[in-house]
Image (tube, one colour):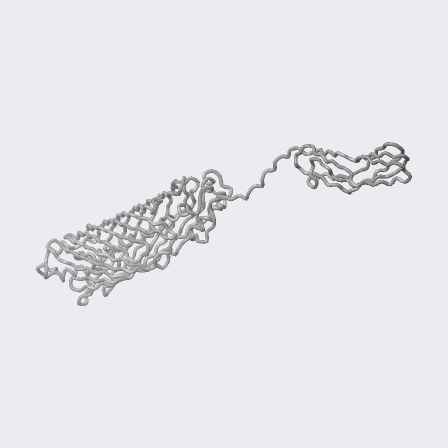
Length: 527
């Protein structure tokens, strides 16, 4: 900083305070000044100029700015010039330029936000177990997802979860188990007819043998004897009675039509199902007390899921061996052993706002089962009453399978295993009405069924397009009803030469979400 003075004799000092008198730079943000005063030393006579340092600290920032200035001046000057006769201080000023050495900075990209694989999904404490499971599986599958799956991950929200849950998958096992038990019913019905027609006549609900005057004879023969007066004489005296005798070898054909439906639950998708089945069999009376036979059954089930969410068609082929042994005192034991093959074709429709696609798949399975029945027959004139107990067991397996299509939401399903064990306590009654052309037998039946096994299951699954080890979840099935009831009515017709036909209707009661109706037609042709 420079200052001027005019002195008459040599040697003096001048001091003053430095202050900022102007400029474009801003104190604090652009600079700061160390020290607030300066001292100038003057030597010699006459006009002189002197300089003194002023320390200015420049603030180094990253802003790109034009050259800025600082104007400095001295105020409150004072001198120390002993012996000088004339001292005239001049002005002390300085202009400081601040030059910017910064270049235009390269923009720093913003820090990436944490990856959110499902931006529209959020955990809800009100989720059902299946919603919670699919939420976890989907968020896992969406981590690192690409292609169609990534598109789905970016659009799915909480309201769409129910459309994605494969809660109809449980219907495969249910259809197989139900088919097995209905086939048990068909074959047991055939055994009933055999006991009725053993040696004489044929009615729908007569059973086994009865003891009359110490002689064990088939129920059919007893009924014919009881009906003798109505037919104009004793059955044994009428040569036409031979027309009602059966050959030991017999064939039968039965057809079933079943309609049922299930309401939606928190764990399973509801559906409506139509099942058609036909069973062909043959049996042989080895002796009056023992009959053995074999049967083949085919069934087809068409299932349509509620909310237009897809369909399933199932086919089943079953092979059965069966027998009945007539015990003394009109008791009997029946048994059935069966093995079945199942196939399923499934269309799972996935539909939510902005998306509609179908995942298709095919699965196979098998089933084996065993049924054991025990009962007693009571003949009261033309009536036959039969209380009985039956134990049924089946084990069904569905192989693992994988869907195709689905717009990124196709899934893989692990194998399933379903164990079912039931007891049936029931009774049936019929009345044999003799006519000139045969025997007509109306009947009724009531059963109480209790389920011991077949608990709620977890069906393991994963999203097919997810990375290895990711996207897994489990679908929980309903716990089956432990107790329900079957009520039915029937009408049987026995014709000469052992020919017979019947019609049966059955309705199921007591299941919380299921209704079921069965119609069965049958015919027997002896050889």
